[in-house]
Amino acid sequence: MQKNILIIKIGALGDIVRTTYLLPGLKKKYGDNTKIYWVSSKNAFSLLKYNQFIDVIIDIERDSEIEKIKKIKFDLVLSLEDERDILIKFKEIKYDKISGTILNLNNITYTDDLKEWYDMSLISKFGKEKADILKKENLKSHSEIFSKGLGITKIEPYYFNSKEIEDRVNNYMSLFKENFYILGLNLSAGKRWPSKSLSMIEGIKLIKRILNYKKRKIFLFLLGGKDDFEYNKKIFNKFKNEVNIILIKPTSLEEFGAIIKNLDMLIVSDTLALHIAISQKIKTISYYAPTSAVEIETFGKGKKIISTSKDYCSYKPNVDNTSITAQKIYNVLEADLLKD
Image 1 (cartoon, one colour):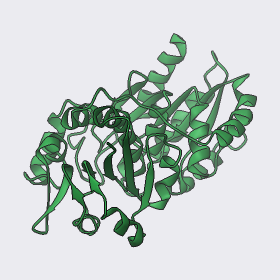
Image 2 (cartoon, rainbow, N blue to C red; image 1 turned 180 degrees about the vertical axis):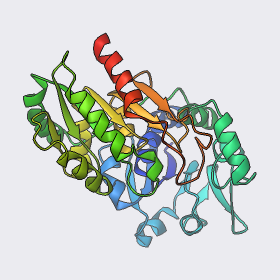
Image 3 (cartoon, helix red, strand yellow; image 1 turned 60 degrees about the vertical axis):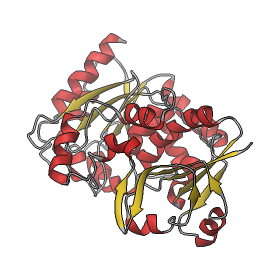
Image 4 (tube, rainbow, N blue to C red; image 1 turned 135 degrees about the horizontal axis):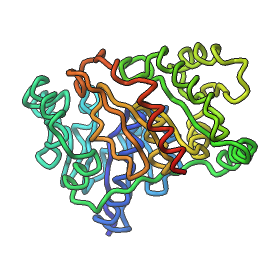
């Protein structure tokens, strides 16, 4: 008998990538004859449409598509959004079991099986202050909490992309890979969480140190999305006469993922790029100020630099990230280069 699972996960994009890691475990638990429906936004479709575990992608903006799934009885609804306007759209969905966020008498709450995650969140029943404390005390990754809460097998990263685009990007990147160690830098984290970004002063220092490294030929790719481009352009202008650095303009998610797949290493904040790198088993050096480092599992392929400031790991938009320095990042990079 066919079973049906509905996943409601619309943003952020990096969170969508790591949520896809749950799908093989859910398929194993509910059986191969399980149909997975995923509700998201159009800007995330490129992260989902190649995924072999997803059967139907539903656009959150198309009410007609939501009306269709109201006719289906779901064995499991995995509700991972905490905005009232979104949850209201699914209040008439029929299901046997729901995990995650729920709308209860117009208040947003969450189910017991995933309380370890949501007790640390902005909708924590304990309030923001206690949520920050729990977040700092937490020793479990996102994958550990969700695999236990949902009762599924150990989570492993994976990524599906356009084969055509991957082949084209592979051909382009092979020109560099023959002669260089390819290092990606996604040092900006956009506008919403400015303290996730490496300061521009430290970013410039870091690139200077890397370009002066003599024991290995390194080529730098400056990466990022639209919100990172001004940051990247300002940094690139400091090095435009250097031959071993290139600025990659914002591109499609397919091309972005394919570029990351060809890197030897990525230096990055907690952004979409980090999760795409993790999902493709690319080595990373990542740094954390507002984000909890322990929540992000790198599956043995990453090194982490963690803020030593008192407000590390909190929901403040502008935490102190001055302890994340070029020197600390470079030291980790150099140790890895020498090891290889």
